[in-house]
Length: 491
Figure 1: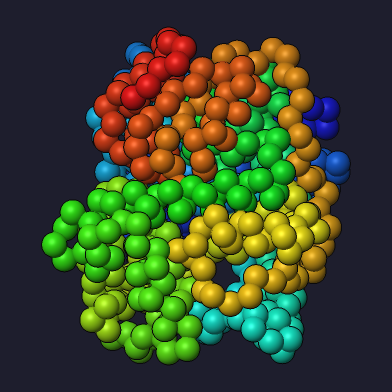
Figure 2: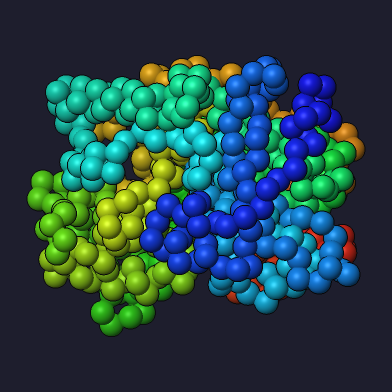
């Protein structure tokens, strides 16, 4: 263990009820499960000052159901950044497929909320629930210098909110926000590994969770037993290339949805997929000037409409709901599309938001700094052109990034170098993944010298969440017995 951290590495977790960790009505229902136990892990605010202020992370476990077959703990992170690891394990236990039960026989299933996320303390917040609703009811535009100035002012206001709302106890937001980057999350994960009594780490990371896994592999390669990284973030991609690849991925997913929809007699996008983007723009661009009134008193803006569509493109299972929501919108009803946007934004029926999007923004800044410095207008126009169904028709402008106004990060990500001592791990990449393009998985597998599993499909990530028995079985077999999939495996 790193010098000066002996007490934290040797801490004994006090397991108890998970009810206090629930932040939404839905979580309150399944966090009460008797199969779950929760605790708080203490970690340093700054690893440069291990004897200085500390913070706590929320942790959940579902103990292994077969003590004679128990291997250790299997850690999960669902991505974001900003998504709750406590929540994904609670959902896996409540709704999990057969492979989850198979894994739970051999492992304690463990989820953690990274620093700043979910039920961890402090938690990153940048806007109140009322402010978030008000933000969504207003569309920031770029047609005039005044509109651009308003958008820049909002970026500054957002960042100031992060600093003022993300404090707890003696730790201020200005102290905390520079320390939330992925480099420190990987260090926290090693403290957790020791605290649960494991000599080596077993880990499944989805989406941004692959960045946590990659950072862990870079810092603690000899501490890894098994690792699955699904929906890869390429650690060596530049900001422009990463944004361009994601834009292309979402347009590809939208085109696949449009092709599927065109076979339905009630498809509002029409029977010619080649015209679907133009038809979609005709449907949603009027919302820029006249948002649709909703039954709960809110309004559906252009931004919420495109967010709802993007949310549904994460999984083919949501395509029927998206087709129905777009048909409703064509008839002047936006509630179904707003429900999809609410699910992405983390808003429950009572109007309460989880802090996922706030944490996403701040952790992105901590990892990369002011990303606007990496973009010029030509880059922004190229990215916008790669996903025309998102296009509002307003001029493409590079405005201020909230990162510009946040305290500077103490732990920016660096390109991945050569790794020594890392066992062979598994990377899963889906051909039609809208959010983390397939090629990012190819590149990550090369960088880590991992086995690549290709999944043919149109969903964001695949293991344990799409019903693909091929990928579920080979992933479970690898985690339990360390039997690697063959080279060039496709599911």
